[in-house]
Image (cartoon, rainbow, N blue to C red; front, side, top):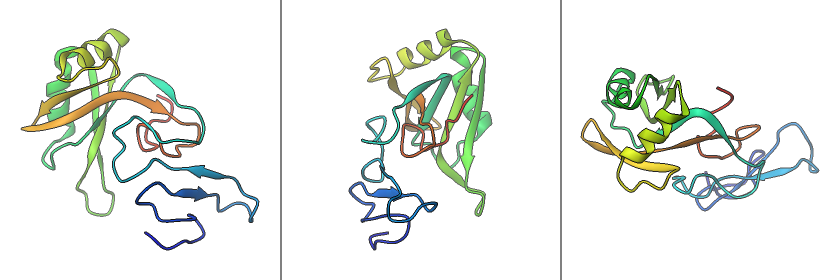
Length: 154
């Protein structure tokens, strides 16, 4: 984590760098989002972010939250397709997921219905835990970004 290696040129705790494994010393470096928690909607540097149509990133999920319980909650704002991201090795929740709505009106309704709403993010209570909902942003190659690289395309 803290020792420089072929994929980073510094510790990742306060914002490190990603060095492409495909080039030599002249390979470009991309600034990764700082710290372990990306609450600001993206890190510095790297390709510019683009909003992904009708998709929300949901962070801070309880370990017991399932795609079904997410769908039961977020469907109150419109037709929703929810997914909880799972660790492929342990089968446990990674603590975040995505909601894709049929319309942008449903996205705006969901963001406006939570607490601490800013228009691009809000907080909701799901399975007894406060979760953060924010507009999902795509980065061209998934380096850093509002969805940890999980919002690519759709």
